[in-house]
Amino acid sequence: MLRRKVSLILVFLVLLVTLNIWSALAQGLPEGFVYLSDVIETAQFDIRYYGENNFIGSRIDGYEAPTAIATVEAAAALAQAAELLEEQGYYIKIFDAYRPQQAVDHFVRWAGDLADQKMKSVFYPDVDKSRLFELGYIAEKSGHTRGSVVDLTLVEMATGEEVDMGSGFDFFGPISHHGTDLITAEQEKNRNILRDAMLASGFELYPEEWWHYILQDEPYPDTYFDFPVSLVSTNGRPGVMDEALEKAIGEARRTMNEDLGGPFGAAIIDVDGTVLCVASNTVLGDHDPTAHAEVNAIRLAAKMKGTHDLSGTVIYATGYPCPMCLGAIIWSNITEVVYGCRPEDAEAIGFRDDFIYRFIEDGRNDASILRIEEYGREQCLELFEEYAKLSKVIY
Image (cartoon, rainbow, N blue to C red; front, side, top):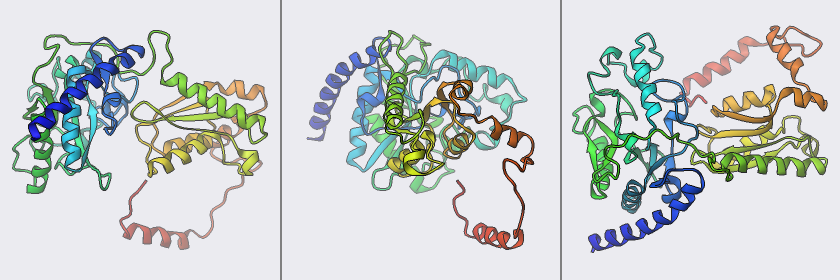
């Protein structure tokens, strides 16, 4: 009965993926490839190579958007695995899928620079960087570049938390191997839940990495692609950035004409490449000097996602963010800002941030802008010490 159900699911998913090819083509993907977010609605994404939380510590060449792409066949098989895992109470979280050759070349260049040890303590503390090629952690060709490999983990549906797999994604060391004796029985059980669903859906495991799975019947076994991981249109049709631009301008125009604030809008693009929320400047309407478009968008996105951590998202702003907004963006763990108008464009209509930047650059000593003094440090340190003893999460 289960086998028949899975077969029916697979047939349905193949049809679904076929329909989604047209969506992918409309956004400039080569024929035979799809966005995984179009195929698996419940999938979560943490595209590490788009940000800085990876073994290099910076965005990787070819990753122009926080999205995941795969061949039609790999997407259909992964959707089947996701269905099997949901029946057991888990969503999948994808770290990487298709990877352009230019990204692999970036890895190779980095591996050859032995002086760059920026992320060693996090991703390869016990491995000599000079041995990365020898040990198979870095190679000049990657199965990911063929489009039918995926890196992923599990998320508990009930809690929204990642499942404990014993080591993190891209950790270089024996603890990441299948069959290692360096993890607990519970961690091994968790890995096996993912393994069993992936093997049942047509993937094979990579022995050295618990997160890495390869489609058994790859459609392009000898082809290494190099098109970028991108959501931006290449054929003139609107992409996600065009959507963010249009919505941010529209919201800014509305509140501007209602005398609620200045001509500023912002949109936050989620990790799956969708516009999560849009906001505008409402300083006048809210009687709130902090109600800038970017701050309002961050507040709304955090409330929608139920977390203060907006890692992996991108913020689009109609104007270059002011110092306050840049600070809010950094505190929210957003690592990419795209803006429309330049600072001089805002200055031309009466908005100037230069004096704030000068105040900061000059050591915050201009009392005509702001007088700052220290008072009551000893009493306040007591409060800080109480917090330190509570072992709270540092954000």
